[in-house]
Amino acid sequence: MLGQQLVNGVMLGAVYALIAIGYTLIFGVLGMLHLAHGEVFMVGAFVGLVIATKYSGNVMLALAAAMLATGVLGLLIERVAFRPLRGAHHLAPLATTIGAGIALQETARWYFGPEQQGFPSTIALTLWELGPLRVSSVQVFILAAALLLMGAVHVFLARTRAGRAVRATAEDPVVAGLLGVNVGAVIALVFFVASALAGAAGVLVGLAYNSVHPFIGVQMGVKGLVVMLLGGLGNVPGAMLGGLVLGVLEVLGVAYFASSYRDAFAFGAVMLMLLLRPEGLLGLRLQRRD
Amino acid sequence: MLIQLGINLILALSLYFPLSAGQLSLGQGGFMAIGAYAASWLTASHAWPWPVAFAVAALVAGAVGALVGLPALRVRGIYLVLMTMAFGEIVRVFFLNFAPTGAAQGFRGMPFVTSLPLVAALGVATAVLAARTAGSRMGRAFAAINRDELAAEVLGIDVTRAKLASFTVGAAVAGLAGALWAHYVQFIEPEEFGFARSVAPFTFVVVGGIDTFWGAVAGAALLTLLPEWLRFLKEWRLALYGLAMLAVMIVRPQGLIDHRLLRALRRWRPGHPREVAR
Image (cartoon, rainbow over all chains, first blue to last red):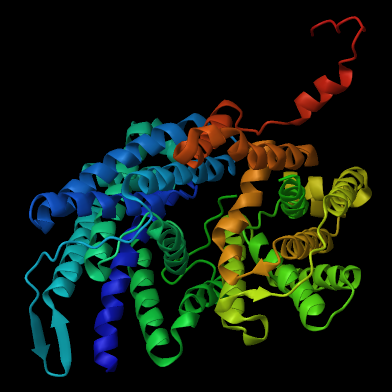
């Protein structure tokens, strides 16, 4: 029972982590919150749904298409909702991204209708029995895809030239610019990567819970913020760990308490974290970015 | 329609108070829920007269605001935003499980009290309070903290007291807005006080302009009436509402109304010779 819950929790947590990595990358380079990130996730889920339905349940294709589409959407959001406001009051991008989020939600509702829709049964569902644990092939796929993407992000940030430019910009955009980093391009790149990860998470959640609707992004977006905070703002490994912690915490909470308290665990954890350790699980120091 | 506008105006002002001292709260939906449930419980289950119930609701919301504001003083900027957001969600989950007020089924049975004159009177009273505060000693302390907290402290301003006061007043005003709302729709449920409800006053204030309380007034008016004006667009109307918000912020990142505009309006008198441009 406990082992089974842990498996479910890790799967949910991996998806949370994908969303939170996007938040934290964007916060890292801009010091701003992107409140339409949950809607990017929602768009990813719908693009995946459309492609999977059209091409007889090809999940890999759906995942790739969703990531590409949301990546481009991320570039568009950066161009429209963030770039014109550089240098403005730090609250202004919150309002523009809320506006963009409403527009995306309503467009999705107009196009797809407000009802829940399911993915076509895609991967042939097999259940493996590992001792007391039951793991389905869909769960394995979700976990593998999420871990692979997280690994790719880690390699990108740690080993590539572009990744180094991202880290330099996060450290200090002005100095990075003086040293020859094209800060504008780095920010655009970060938005592409962050949004593509959210899009992938959208497809994975669609597969896991088999329900996609225009408003799934709202709660997911808020959870992503929680995870980012648990891990420490701007901290990518922290976001991965925070996602797993929250996923396991929620699943265990639902299993051993009541499901109606589910969200209380996430937000209770945030309040405690802010009071006791505001720098996050893996944060070394409090970044001052007022 | 106008009643909604009045409630939104009070809600926008509830965010303006803490924001004028540099504290952004995305938990106003939570305070609104506390006010709404407290007032409804008193009028529906205990048959209290509504003026007493409203006053108690505002006081309870303010007291909870003080309790939240005390630890929240330790965090600032983005951390405060996230903490208040978490608070709002916790309040929602609490009422989702709280049986005496109907839990997930919602709560009904309160009388219809919120007439247009009442909303207008309370809206004007709140706006006057905001205007009087802005010019008062406390209001100038808020502004100083907003500009530079350290400098304000060095100047001898009791930063802790001022921040706590702004947060508490904001929470009480949000509670009042909640009480009005509950006695207008006569049915409340926890889901309507979620994150979206907390975000609404924030968009009012930012679109209207965070410099002065006039911004909160203008933002609440514009963003409440805009969906009505866009009604001819049918199902596209909310999508365009989002895009309009985006467009306003791109053109005027400081919000619709700032100090410069107010000064220009004050100088402008019909019939007077135009001031020589500097």
